[in-house]
Length: 64
Image 1 (cartoon, rainbow, N blue to C red):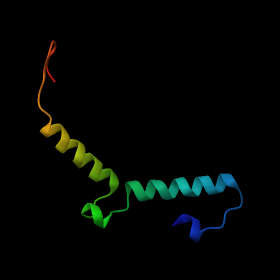
Image 2: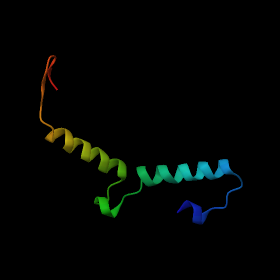
Image 3: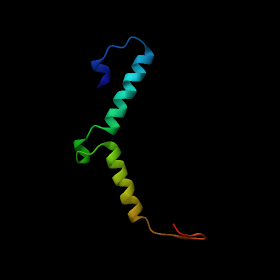
Image 4: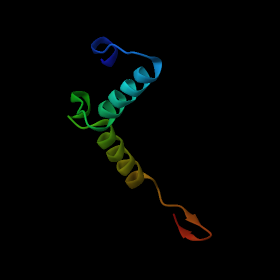
C-alpha cells in the first residue's frame, strides 16, 4: 500500500500520493476476485446486467 512505501514531506503530499494510488487501484489495477477486471470495468458490467434485467415500465412519456 502507498503508506508502507512512501515518506511524505507534508500532509498535502500524502493526500496527493494516496489519491494517485486510489485512482490506480480503482481504474487500472485488475482484481483476481473480479475475474481480473478493474473495479471500473466490473461496475460497468454490473450496471449493464442490472439494466437488462430491469423490467420495462410504462410511464406517461412511453417505455422507460
